[in-house]
Picture 1 (tube, each protein chain N blue to C red):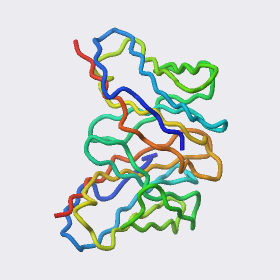
Picture 2 (cartoon, one colour):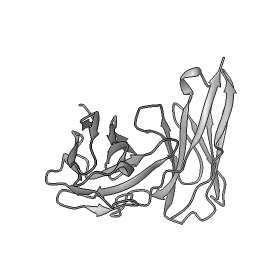
Picture 3 (tube, chains in turn blue, yellow):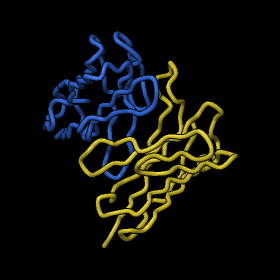
Length: 111
Length: 114
């Protein structure tokens, strides 16, 4: 039982490049989330999903897209990276009861 | 969305009890109060959740007064390893909204010293 895993752990992009962050969970959770965390700040919700095939916008969705084709995976895409998207990205999943389980994070730098 | 207010930082010594208070004046009837802990370079980790009165688990207690406009996380006998950022969140527990109302503030940086 690995919990929530994120791929990759680190990435450096140039402005305008695209990439996809992968989040996988093996707990059969319905809900999944993508957050970003900037230095000295709390987490801000980018997008979330309440089940396979569903996605919804969170607090800061602009510049990101997501997909939930399989229940265990939640992908976060950056179509044209900008320096403002330099951040640490956390994925989380939850069942219908209580807590969110977070992944280890992906540190992204856009130059 | 219910906004939360916490102290930016707190200092303590090993073996002491630490109480971190969170204000949430516009908490809604359906909202629960949840606390998370975050160490550097790690994702947040769930500590405790409650709706009213007192909740206790193996690591902490959560005190919620009758008006629910504030809550206090109590950490008994802290150690150096409790040095972390603690977030108070207020939101819907788990309906079809998927928890989209969960908002992380800047949290409270707890520093525990010898």
